[in-house]
Image (cartoon, rainbow, N blue to C red; front, side):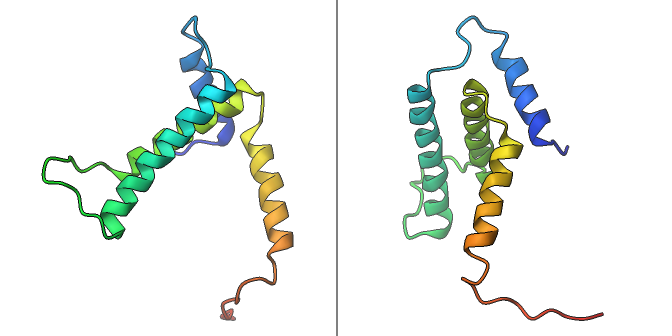
Length: 111
């Protein structure tokens, strides 16, 4: 299934809105985001780094870890009334301008 950022934000909001507690505070969400990024880093380190998993540790899907990061980031954005599409556009515009000559470009093949 493909989701737009608006659909992602609405689905997360529909889920969170079911509960009286609502969204966590920004500080708690930052802690949760850090925790989830740490879990993703651990999985990447096991797969691509020098630290193998213990025999007792289950294999986790990297997609699941990235999904957890996306969920918490979306909660964070929703709680602060930030549109992820707008945030992404601002970031990409900055990066495309700032870094346009920073990296070696691939040769284009003309068809």
